[in-house]
Length: 139
Image (tube, rainbow, N blue to C red; front, side, top):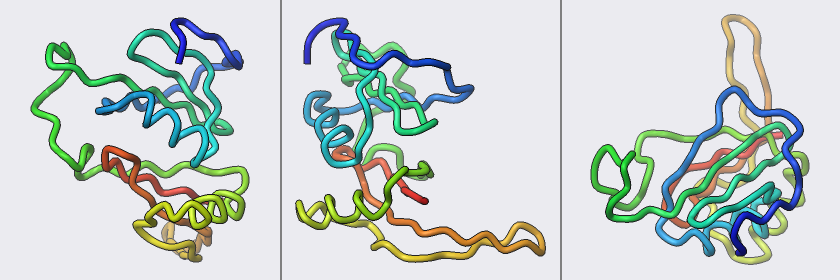
């Protein structure tokens, strides 16, 4: 990872962009780009901005003097939160993860969720990133 590298410009900023503290930024960046299919938009020392379709994502290298840490980071990070991310090719993601023996938190399956009386059906799979954040990829 190089300093202030601009790879793919962001054409519009999302209204909500999670910023995840990570224990090993180069490793996490590799997993997010190579395994999960995110695009690296730009990076600067200790930070990376990623996107996947309309989802935008930030990763920051955790450090002891982290000004925005609200408490100690203990694995798994992000306990109690999961992120739903629409993936442009869920079948390719699933094939890549299983081909690399990446652990699935929940295998690819179809789920139906109710919104009042309206059913919404989606395929989904769940994985944890290298620090334990729970990601639910859907189609």
